[in-house]
Each structure stands twice: as C-alpha cells, then as structure tokens.
Length: 369
Ligand code: FAD
Image (cartoon, rainbow, N blue to C red; front, side, top):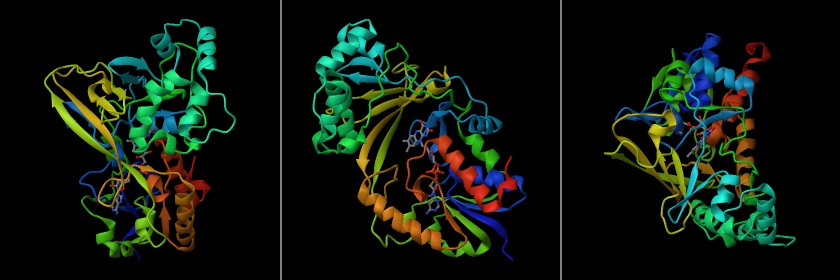
C-alpha cells in the first residue's frame, strides 16, 4: 500500500485546486515543488509591506460563476479593475483600444468619427500575408504604428513582418469610453495577495519545496497516482524534441517614492524601450505604503535553465505536443495538468476549471457538487 493517494508535482494553482478537492475526500497528498515556495506563478513576495507579484501581474477575472464562488471561498477579492495604459514616446493611451484612446490619438469625440477614421486608414487587402498586414487591415496605421508594432516585436523578439498573420485574428476595439480591460463580469485581486489561497489549499498535505521531480524520480513510488504540472516534454526526456516557450525576465526595484507611475500596469509600446511593461504593485491593492516597488518586464527567448512562461502555439509545437500526449495517455497512474503539463496558455479561471475537471474524471462525478 502506498503512503499517499497522490503525488502532486508542482505547487501552482492547478495542483492547489486538486489538493483541496482531494483533502475534501480525505485523500492524502505529497507535494513537491522545485522552487523555494508554494504558489507557482501567482506567488507574491512581501516587500516594504507591498505584495509583489514576483512572476508577473496576476489579475483574476472570469465569467464562470462557479469558479468565482470557488475562489471566494479561498480568499476575499478587492474591487480592482484592470485598466492598463500604453506609453508611446511619453504620451499615455488607454487600453484596450476605446474612445479614450482614439480621442487621445486623433482628438475625435464620437464613435461615428472614429469608425470613419479607422476605415480611412485600414489597409484594404484580401489575404494579409503577415502580422503587420493583418493588423493594418484591422485597425489602420496610427494605432498599429504607435500602440501595436513595437510592443509585439518585443514580445516575440521578431519583426512584425516575419510573424504569421494568425497571431491576431481580431483586435478588440470599443466605441465606448470604457477602460476595463476584461469583459468578464467577475474580477479582482485577493486582498493580501495570492499566497493565502495556497496555504488553505495545501493544508494537511506534506510539502517539500526546493525539490525537483527529475532529481527525485523514485518519489512516485510513495503515491498511488501522480499529477504532474511540470514540462511534459522534459518528463519524456525530450524524446520528440523540445517544445518552444517565450520566457520573461523581471527586474524588481524598491523606490523611495510613494507613487511612481499612478497605475498598476503601463505597457511601453516603442521598440526602442527594451522592456515591455512596468508594474507598480501597490496599485493592485490601492496601497498607501510610504515606498513603492516596480517591476520592469522583459520578454526573451526561452532556453533550458530559464523559466518557461508562454507556450508558442505553432503547428510544429502542437504536433510535438500531441505525440507527448499520446505517450501520456498510454501510461497508467500519471496525469498531466496545468500550463506546462498541457502545454497550453491557461488563465487562472481556466486552470481552476481544468483541475476540478481532472479531479472529477479521476474520482467519478459523485465527488463533485
Ligand atoms: P504554475 O503556476 O506555473 O505552477 C507549476 C509549478 O510547478 C511551478 O511552481 C513550478 O515551479 C513547478 N514545477 C515545474 N517543474 C517542476 C519539477 N520538475 N519539479 C517540481 N516542481 C516543478 N492568468 C490570469 O487569469 N490573469 C492574469 O492576469 C495572468 N497573468 C499572467 C502573467 C504571466 C506573466 C503569466 C506567465 C501567466 C499569467 N496568467 C494569468 C496565467 C496563470 O499564471 C496560470 O493560469 C497559472 O499559473 C497556471 O497554474 P499551473 O499550476 O498550471 O502553473
């Protein structure tokens, strides 16, 4: 008989939700995490009394009422609404593109005038050959040149003309003066940061931090079943080749002012500015601390040793992933989940849904309300 029902590899959101469901059923979990802390990419470090999102800005938003209720059992959300800005040559524009943005760009006041302006500027072609042509055909020159081109080129580390058109199928444009980035009805930041969610979810589990699965493979023998949220290609020793990722580099800095930029997130859309955005963490929680902590975010190519952040959704990567998935489906008692295990960009609410659904699948629907 195994000592644990589940070995959970990775202490991020996926396994946190899984662990909570398992505990509700009286199941015993062993959690191993290669970083020095639980929380995955949602982890916050308290610096100068401010909850610093160490692995990038995390704003919870969902249209799924069930997921929202589930999260509200774990924490209390504040009323933060994501309203990022774009800085282009020191002029600030509201995002997502809306009447405030267009008014700033062109001095136009009405939706009718703006629609006409976009129509005048739009590139009229049938089959856009690349990202640039696609964006120009959707939104026209000014918005593209000032607010999209440089940012996208930094994000992908490539010229917009060499990126495929399919990356932007549509550009969300609003003809209202509404700066709320998300359309979802539920949104907020956990008061006090994300960490307490993980403390609650992993309560009663045995947790080993600073423990990489690949240096401790025999540990699987201590549990009936394993849920693996690390990289699926690494698990299979890259036998079909490496999956590609984009990585990020974060430069955190404490500043001796109480308010540096007046907003939580400001994107820098000029190609010449090396970072893609600056976060000022206190504004996620309406902080009034005497100092502030800001983070410059740089996009970079992933290589072994760096953190893999974003899966790159090309046909070649998908083909490789499907091969790994076939191996995974053939194997008993190991399940792959989360953004690295499923090689899929998941927002937090989708991660919660996916973890609940895996638990349900493994335990029969009676386990679920
Ligand atoms: P993770 O949180 O990455 O957890 C996986 C864990 O497994 C990590 O802690 C890792 O260290 C560990 N691990 C990996 N390999 C091993 C190993 N070999 N051995 C032991 N442990 C291992 N979603 C939103 O809804 N709103 C947002 O605003 C938002 N912003 C984001 C910003 C950025 C920069 C990124 C990258 C993502 C963002 N997301 C956002 C998505 C969100 O981060 C994910 O939904 C969530 O982190 C997925 O949880 P996970 O458990 O799958 O992965």
